[in-house]
Image (cartoon, rainbow, N blue to C red; front, side, top):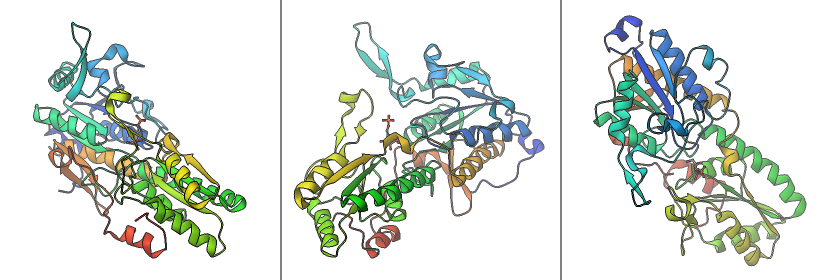
Length: 381
Ligand code: F6P
């Protein structure tokens, strides 16, 4: 379903909305502020108030923990000139999902409880007629549960990982790929000068979108993604073939979720880190294995959270602005329980139930992977 029909104050009046809330959940991504700005401005045009909720759902469930006023009205002035800024003025967290909220028990232990009904209640108490939830797959799952409990909710897909289902892209992805590409460009010259193998580890969770796109854009010689189990020997062969042809340096881009064909993925369990499992560290393993297999000097650069920081690219600013305006348009048009999604030059409305609990991985038989192979890039298989 597309989300285009233009909304006027007259058509919006029929949806009985006067005040909406907006929150940003999960890991931050460049473009969050552009969404907030867009929602506030588009809602204001319809005569609606927009209230910002701090630190994900904590502004409603744990206001005492919030870094600022837990819920406050956002004026046009509040969102003036924030569209180009990274991060989120509302704060965010990837702890404390209302679906599994850690609650202290009388014996001192923690138990996870479903507090989504309380979120609905808090929204009603504050006179919020609808909620815009900006987040990744976890936030879309929460939004879906809130919708089922009777709250009007529209989701806006955010993540640098680009792993949300049913949207061509998420905002944040283009900025992350742009920065990773710039880093790879820089690493080429030092790798060349020192005759080294540079291993670049990038985020992306269980999807290889960032690694694949930045690797192709940056002219990497090998790219390892979670979707294609790798063998170090295949990468070592590629490095040796380059050396035999007179090229004594190489750049290897590794997604944090890449996994060897034989062996386990590098992941810290939820028990170790106290929340959802945490990826990272594969770059150092590849560096050691390649050094041993090729005898070459290798170095690792972990781009990590640098990919999440900084200003959104122009593409992400436009994407985020379109998503924010479309979320308001959807509510004004009487839609709820949907996520705005990027189609081919359209914004679509996708049922949250189709998105919750799903992720989107790089298609191994898609043309981008084929392109990488045709460019002679080693994919580790
Ligand atoms: O989902 C975005 C993301 O940046 C992933 O790429 C990464 O695995 C994760 O968040 C890191 O989360 P945290 O900031 O909690 O370590």
